[in-house]
Length: 108
Image 1 (tube, rainbow, N blue to C red):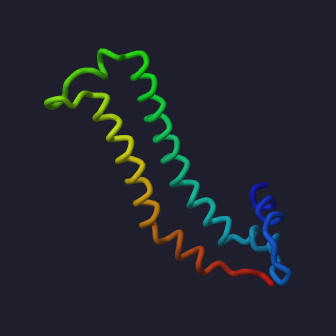
Image 2 (image 1 turned 60 degrees about the horizontal axis):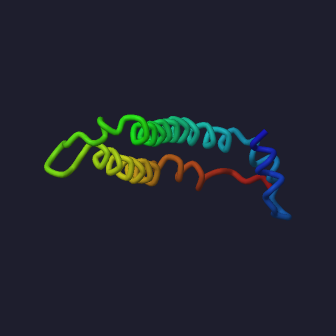
């Protein structure tokens, strides 16, 4: 389903995109990408939404001091930004996706 959608959006007079997106190498690339991205996005969204609920409904907990003037709320906000950067760095370092994408056979 997604593969056909990609094929319809892509343009190229001398490339058979419909065959390219059905190729086992391309399907393997999509599968590998999903295995990393889906859990990472779900974890991040659960963390972010939980932070929002805590800020709204657990104000006493969020106001507890951790170190000096830093409270739990500040620590969790910093953790949210850190987690976004860490996921981005892990994805950029995931060389296997780039290597597979660079060596995909494109049917003519």
